[in-house]
Length: 219
Image (cartoon, rainbow, N blue to C red; front, side, top):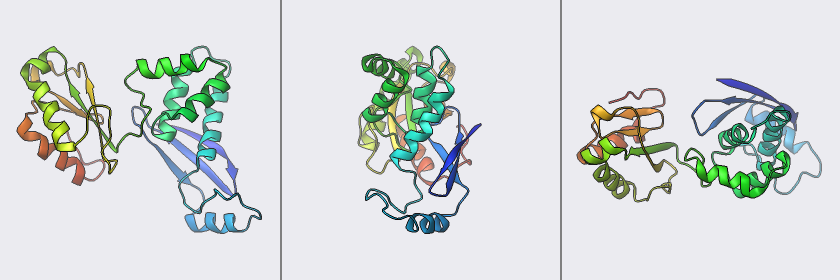
């Protein structure tokens, strides 16, 4: 895990914890929600788009991203790590964020979007709480990976690259998860599930819908 500390804004100091290979960033506030609400209410002429929610605003997230970019100001090849940090902060990479990165790194916007579209890790649409990846490598494809993917599409009601309306699941494909002898394989977040059959898909999804964080094990 890595931590970054950002300057106070309206009496709130953020501690951002970056988790490797995860699409989310966890924010720990030094102030409680009630204290933040009191701090916001005490400031005159508050912008109209300001809310009392404990969720950071886009403006605050961009300032956090600028801290990351500043740390790479003298580093060659900073684009990919900056994009990774941005996706951790926002959960995905919207156009406004990509243009912000393009401007701050002084890179052509086409170059930024080219990297994003080349690497499947990056997403320009919001991702769900769980990312379900179906292996379509040779071994998995031959042993039923295509049928598993079709079942997932039907069960979730989405296509590859999309996210369910409740933001619970996103669907993607991969080429090899290192489990060829136990194909077909499905990776949910960072956990590889082996010998997944279409009949098992419903139970697999139910497990992730109902399981508490940290209690999942590979099957």
